[in-house]
Image (cartoon, rainbow, N blue to C red; front, side):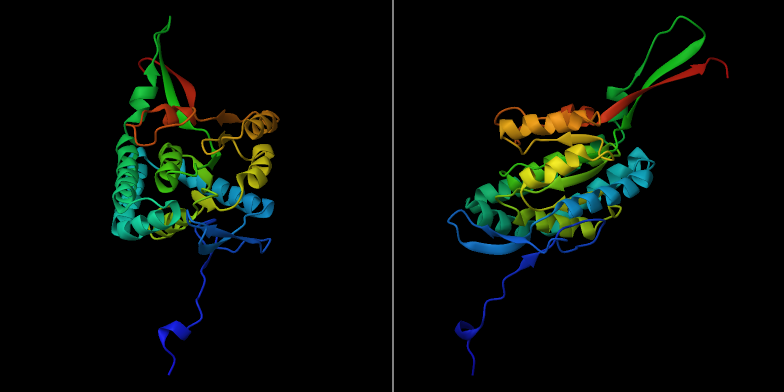
Length: 291
């Protein structure tokens, strides 16, 4: 009779999350996710430039319908993500403990804050336009409005730590305003991002609206920075100044917005609308009075 000690360990190989599905990397490459002590946790798909292009196609297709959804509906979808995350809170805590080597108290705090962060942005979905928009005085019988609109497809890099809270803090404000996102998860601690992608797959998110890639941002982001169908970059998770400079230069060729993070950002601090403002465009609308 075989006992548990005789069993061959089944090592997980996680996939990417593109277009609402879980494909393997086109390259077939993987890398090992380890804990803080260097012990094996899982095999992760190493995203290639072809995977990045596939994610852009999926994000652009989703943008067409997501950007037209009502602000109230977008808030409902983000709130639903938070509900699904709450249902898998224990797994998130375990993932963070295993990956980051923190206590259960710190892991629980990160998970709770990440869920609350998603709810916070959900609540702003039908309110931010009143804050960022304006009614402008003009010399004539016209109404003149400044109205925020989504930028389009955004490529974003999540920080290594806090792996879940950092990823949620990057993704939520981008999609809340009607954008689609291609997010590169923490390269050092990617496992919590996989659990988040499983939450997204079982929520109300439009397939392709949120895409999560795993791999080295230094390999993936240059292709996204030069891609003509990507409208903006969020470099929050990149700390290498040379890489940031390179990506800013690459993005200039297609006139992309680029957001970089301040040194040592505090993801546990109360958020502001700065991330919301970063990926919205202001449209000016004129309308004659009395019509």
